[in-house]
Length: 638
Image 1 (cartoon, rainbow, N blue to C red):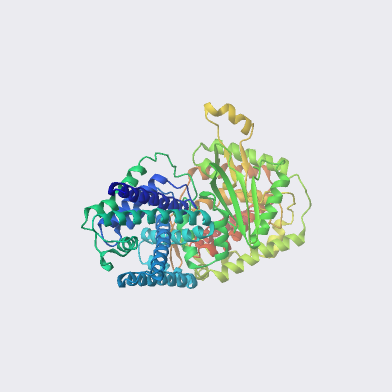
Image 2: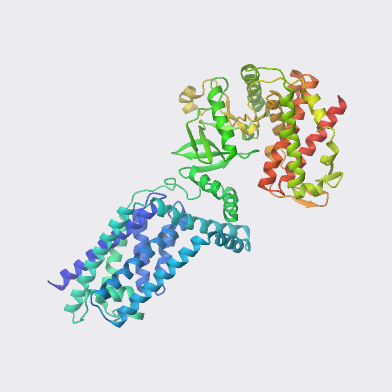
């Protein structure tokens, strides 16, 4: 056979092997997102070209950078997949080297290279084993190292290490093993034919090398091999030509891949939400719940997390190019969420509730999805983007529907045993928790009053009489019971805005006369008085709960508390209208009950806030104090 023919076989076989290697790499990528064949083949070709020309495998770093730029999951996924790809090749090469030794190749350099590969494989396997066994300590070390740097660098270190580790796990669990092995076999068949062909070419050029010698030179390099062919133009052409052809071929793949395709290894879009998750992950707390959290949201993108005053979480997600509200809870809270699902199904014909499109109950968690209808926005955002009158129209509609349709169901007289249970569970237990579990609040309670942003505010110890069982019993004794929503904050009222003109006709079928719908009911109130619904709106409009959740930092020095609290003129105007509505529609006794229930709502959310962030919980403690101050004034006026 002619030299040209053999050289062509060598080049074509190598190109075939590179295509198989690129496809195998794509199989690793496809665990998360569609493999961009042109991107991967191009990055692989450029990386290998640089490995031929430069030392220290610089090309692998460039390969990671080039491929990671176009991946939805970015560099962490490219790092993980390249490491897996290289490790598999390392094992294969080491196996081939020892196979050749056992079949009669007794060259000293060959044995030396095979031994080095064996030691490298054992070293990497040992490191991997110890990382798995001591993963808890490793996570803490990573967290401590990251904490030395500023917030941005700390996030980047935690994010990259998490995604790299997480990618390894997901690849191991979800890879198509049979296809991966098939592509590996095809790749090495291509490489083997290429090495045999180039060995035959070199023999015809007077260089006495066998296929095994070519294998040794390529994977041992001039450092360990007795033969150095880097100065021979023919051999360098053999190394570079297939890579150049592969790079040119990669440019022919013009298929458009959108970064919206595939899934994120970490589902949150918001960087703050990602940072909060990573800190919890590296603290090694709630491992089972974190695992369940990733399992729940593995096929979706979390667009935003809604304000929450409980251990159940409501998020806005993107799934199959559609928006949904998703609510999930773990452990004992999962049972409460199951009851909520039952409540929604029961009342979906009574008040405006979105349908539940997906629900799942497994082991320690429960979640359900509700579609986010077109042109929808939470009332909280609506209040800040439209005139107050339009927001008030929505609120009037909500209040009217609840009064006429929900609060008329299952009406019954007040039960004093339930009032006592309500006071014990929602007031006394929460007061004890606040006093015992929060160091910051305990320290502040040593004072009779605080200076909050320069304004004197009495501490909780001043309201013992207001929160006493006897007083609360008297306030609530004339409450009546019925079906209630139970968590009627402005964030749980979703407004449907006017559709665009061009889509108005289609939207009519969806909206009809609907202006709003409600999400996230809470059935665990014990004392099921309609006054709880009215007081929940006060928590938003009077107590500014949603605005307080936006506070980013707080300074506490002795009895001085300072933080920047966002203000909203529309909130104040809307509260004025709502207060007038309450005055017109309720007796003074009913009004006092409603404001008392608001104070209890603040008590109920404080343990959750303390568990989440003990220092930032002081913001909501201050919110409670301001509510109690107004409540005391109202009681005195009465």
